[in-house]
Length: 296
Length: 276
Image (cartoon, rainbow over all chains, first blue to last red; front, side):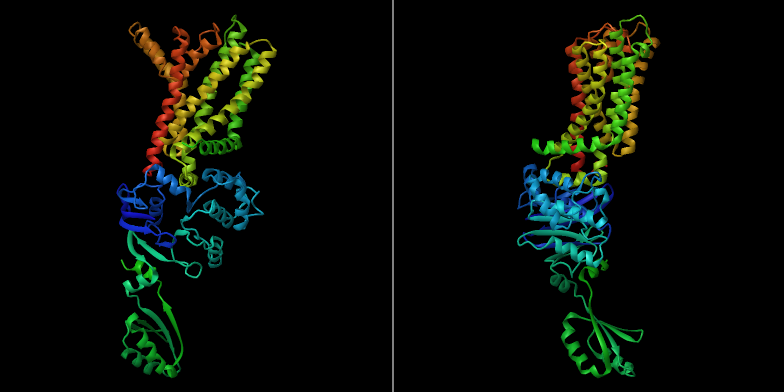
């Protein structure tokens, strides 16, 4: 659908995005994960044609888009920028009506859209009276105008609590065949199903693929926290040390074991035999994007 | 270019500008000054013994030079960079809207707001002057039309200044500087050159130099348009007037060229992330 081929972006001496290849496939949900200054927004701006790459090229359906192709793409694109100050003297309704006219969408579609994002009651009120959450929903609403097949959302859940994140993605819904690209500092796993993850750090691509693919590539260990039964700590420590594991650390009366993916099965089998000396255990899977971001 | 998209942007900008109290404040000031001119006659011109109609029209012409230009310059000073700072410019350009449509729509909206503010001043003033029998309708309508064009010229200049300045504060400061130069400094510099080099500056060169200042072009065209043998006001009074078509073309070029330059610069800078 859209392919960025060896694109980079520099602002003078500052390299915001080093040359990289990223493609957005039809119908997928792609999460672009990275810390502040990683180049997420710069990448998104090149994706939607707001910013010209310093080098490389953007391909749309295999072609370098001219002005007409960009207009065609944008007719089917919903973009939600990270920061926007809507004019406060306008109502939510008038704001959306304006944007509807820009996309050639019937202004009659505004009311149902306001209702779908939970702003029906506030639609007639000035945006200046809106809370942060309401403005975020208004921002989402303008992106959803005309039900575009491609949604590009820049930090859509920034500043929201976990409940707010889940509510946001519930509002977004899942439309079969719709392509969604969003950026975030961390992957909201519990709130949205993501097909692929693109991890950026310092403007460089650290990983692009499904979570399983990246996990295998990084060979990320599984962390197991084991709580020994009373009096069994020394014997348990000895037994664990004999098992094939990545690392064993004893801290605060518990054992933290990093187990290689290839050894998981044998490790848990062995743990089962030691169950008499264990009161509790907890399994933690390190988020793959954090592992990639930390691997500098 | 899609006219409906450009018009949608123009309508929104018009609403935003009319919602701004500042434009109405300056418009009220303009109205107060114009009515003062209307009621006091030749007094503001400081000239006695001249036909009242001529003095009133000349005073209104000068009022336009001072206030219409300032209103237009400050109105447009932050036109583009404000939207960039808010994030709405990027959002709008992510829609199927070209930079050209956005730029021209924004200019059109600002111009309409300026026109409404000016007409809100000139219409009541015209009614007062008409009832007093001081003006001729045709002359007054010509003045109003020229004032609108003058406003358009300086609005176009302010848009260009806004894009070149990249920041609102700098844009406003630069616009005020342009106003000071156009309204005061330019003519003083020409007078100064006459005094510094007496008899050495050809008349044609001097006349041509006046075309470099749209405020002077407006004055020259205004004197011709109102058909008044008004007292010489400003430098434009000491030289023979150009033919009206030449002046009209010059004034329109003063509107078109900054607007075109601003549009080209805007398109280039939005594409390369160098707008601010």
